[in-house]
Image (spheres, rainbow, N blue to C red):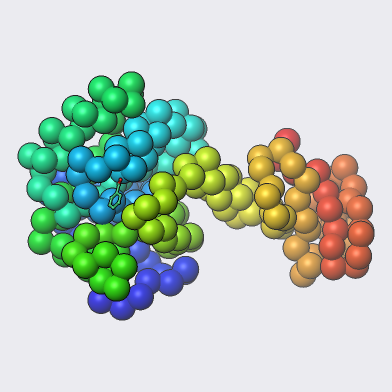
Length: 213
Ligand code: BEZ
């Protein structure tokens, strides 16, 4: 196990899940993927997180994203827990939960931080692009549920900045103005890419309306 960094290829694995054996790269196909870990089944914060992910399934699908959860409990426990999640969160869990009882995936992805939580996974998130490249990681403690609107916001930023020469400023959300990458200086290309113009607050800080809106 070595620490995974942005730009690394997401390691492939084969593991059991609530939807049968998953070979990760094959399962991901040409989609974006959000892989996110949970300390344990039948725990309150995790229950709300999985419910929220299911409730946002339309938003993930719209962006071409598959979600996949993981914890170190076995598949029969996951399946019982899904019943509780659906009941209590008024939703239908429609994505797999990896049953990582041998901790092989958790180890591969460095999701167990023993100085924080001895044997369970912390709340890791990996956003992986269709080329299987890790584009974003973040890690929350067990006591803090993640913000799934933030995960969607990051995906919006990644997908926008992959196709336009822009970056997204602090607290940006889809539809807000963006910044033009400083390396773009050619006046003809600036005019062609940003027909609505831009505001050069400083030579390096040029704001423009979101180009795909
Ligand atoms: C939870 O998901 O609620 C949780 C899990 C482990 C420690 C604390 C909370």
